[in-house]
Image (cartoon, rainbow, N blue to C red; front, side, top):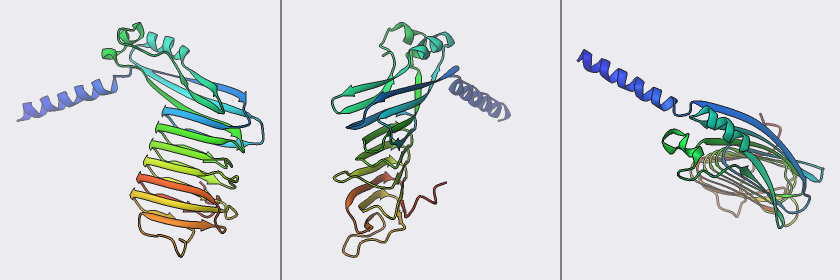
Amino acid sequence: MKRLTIFLTAACLIVMFATTSVWAAKLTKDIEKSTVFNSGTVVIKSTEGNIQVSCSDEDQVVVLANIEVKAKDKAFLEAFTQQVDIALEHEGDQLVIKPDYPVLEKGDQFQQWTVGGKKPEIKVQYTVMVPRKLNVTAKSEEGDIEIDRVCGAVRAQSKNGSVVAKIQTIQADCKQEYQSMNGAVRVYMSRNTEADVDMNTLNGHIHSEFPPVSNGYYNATAMKVQVNGGGKNVSLKTYNGSIYLFKSMSTIG
């Protein structure tokens, strides 16, 4: 029995070592880019990494990106990381911000240097400054999203991460949507904002410092409130998480 325990312990240590050594090396780099863009929608795409968006009175979009790359082979890592960039692409009335790096196909020399053909892991943390009245679309597969006082239309969606918004004013005819598949949605709203807020969660609860409308729906997973008499449409939704709506931004930590 003692020999079996020792064998199992050794096997566990081997598995742990193999798991932690899949990525033998890691490099990080910072990229800053800017472009004039004062009308339309800024689209930010992230597969893995957080997105933070704030606004200014300038007429340009400023992007700060922290990029982390993990790979098995150090020589490959250095060569690959040098080619990782951030693209700012003007597409009609949109400015699309996304990672730009070589696509590794089967048999590619880059991929031959990785463990069992495993592609490198790339994580991008975005900090983006946009003109105050622009529209913003932010999407992350694995990461949190934070939107700070953007006045235009907003669509913020995270698959696995929380979504936080600070709302002060919303332009006429603009809708703001904040959604997470697996994570909480937290909104800090100025008392002066004129908004109709719809909140829905499938597996979670709703906490609102604003009372539900008297003739609207209200239960543990769905609620509608009017802020300052109502007006602009704001949608808060999560499938696996809770929703929090606070009256002011003074409680932000």
